[in-house]
Length: 461
Image 1 (tube, rainbow, N blue to C red):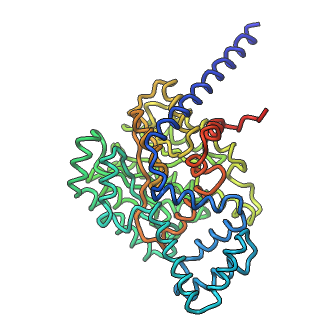
Image 2: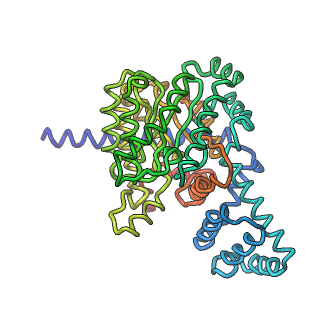
Image 3: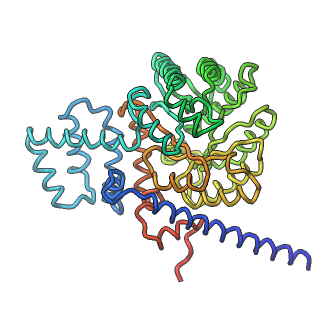
């Protein structure tokens, strides 16, 4: 009898929790509507244009293949040639009248140059939505404007998986220059001091694969040792300038290398008492809860808690392809809803670890964020102890809505050239054009948006 009563209580409690999550999600949607950009805003028009790819899977595949290939095309004639190969000679759902015009323009040498030039300009304009700028110095005013609007930043230098040590040394120099530029920005310092008390001088995210060209899971110890050597000057500079350093996670094969590097280098005497270090956990990995538990146990031994940026993961297609090629079990969940469920379980682990971990919820999924906010209140985690991290160029109205609730928002703001940043750009385009992606949220009507607040879509009656 007692067991039956306990089960009924759990069902009622769970039902009440889900109801509060739904209400929080509806509140965020309502608030975001009040901050929505005008119908003719640049991002809204861009979002609408991406809808052209919806329900056209072959065209979308070719578009992303072309974008991925674009950095290797050095001339307008080569760009025109591959436009023909990808969009004229390869069957897609491209409307016949567009296909006819494209064939006509590409058949003429002069007009094909204009087609290629249009594609080049289009890709660079698209990059401007997701890439902050070429350098911090040249585009710092964008970050200043975001801080004035209540949105903090973490800056990332575009580029990953370098092929040589010469290239790696260049990236290390770029990170050191970035730290120097951020620390000397007096205007940013004044805004931060007045509006964001307690915020470090700056916040930088580091891609470890850009610092060492020989990261290899089969040479784990050597990879960790060399990566630590590459990181020390960056961390020393950051500590001397009071700048937050976050180590990004990338492909699964380097996950354990980066995690072990973080555990070892953050424990070194010159870094062990520094309060501004963070690491990433990817919830689409089946190992993520175990990984997170290791980070929590490690952080409990530190004087100051680590920050954990909890993301779902941006390399799903890559991980699936790698696993298929090598005949391995995929390290990622195969279904998006399983990743969503796991993200919420990881969120609970983070919140239950208070005050030993500072959670940073990296997501544009309103259901995932609503769940985190409700459960933070459930576990009495203060709103000033956690933050939300979102991507630069995506969902400004949602960022403002979250800020209006008194929760800190930080933008992941990449800087660099378009060419080395093309892999990042393709991942952002994929996120904005999938049925589950953020673009669906921004363009859905209120009834459809409400369905997004369920872990699994409610069955139609």
